[in-house]
Image 1: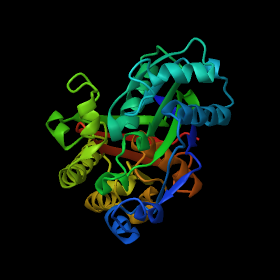
Image 2: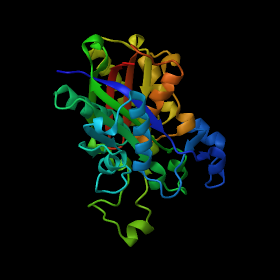
Image 3: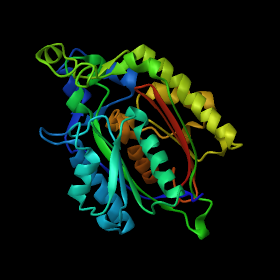
Image 4: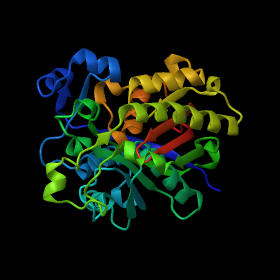
Length: 331
């Protein structure tokens, strides 16, 4: 099997900032309450009319420029998102057109907060099979489009953003690099605890679903918190054990940025050195499929991630979905 590596990374967040102070004026909450429970100080929010594909194309352009590639060099586009521009056509189709990636095929992948890891897994296997040599994997969400800003339990958490990576085969000279292993699972019994109830075939859009605000994110916070802490640890421990590794072998732990307390609880159970744990939720909030690429970019900027570093990605999200990936950074 051919191993895939991440050869380039690009990220984009919209310039508009929604701070905790702004939210204090919109809903019954406080900066102190938000900081204590989530660790978030601010988040990026799109202007009206800006969609997921608009963020995705900016992130993709950055990744291609970093690698010196043309859009026509890309063979496959996988977009992880729960906020597609439309149900159909896919956001991957729209991104392909905006980029000018002629000849590429692709699809959207819905796995909520685990979306980037799932898309990374799928893209790497297209390369591992020998079918393709360059895959663009994008995690992008405009969560503000499905958030009820009268619901303080959810509106303080989410932000908008996008991250894109280029996947290519490792060469003979760097065959120790790339995606070393992955582990994913789902548990559909968790569906009621984090969902957007209406808009699909179960509850098609109607006057009543709009009036009842069923097109927004609905979350049972305590249930999601308990699941995330338990399963993020479980999947991390399992993938490390399968590769005869411990937390001490890692150079950096890059988890999904859902909640600072979830990240810290997971890292503590793993026995991670806090200096090796990447946390940037304070400035972005939970951008769903974009959190891991955004955190990866900040890990590079902070010197936590460099060529040869061993990184562990982990996420848990609506569905429930769970995922982890071991990556030896290639550049």
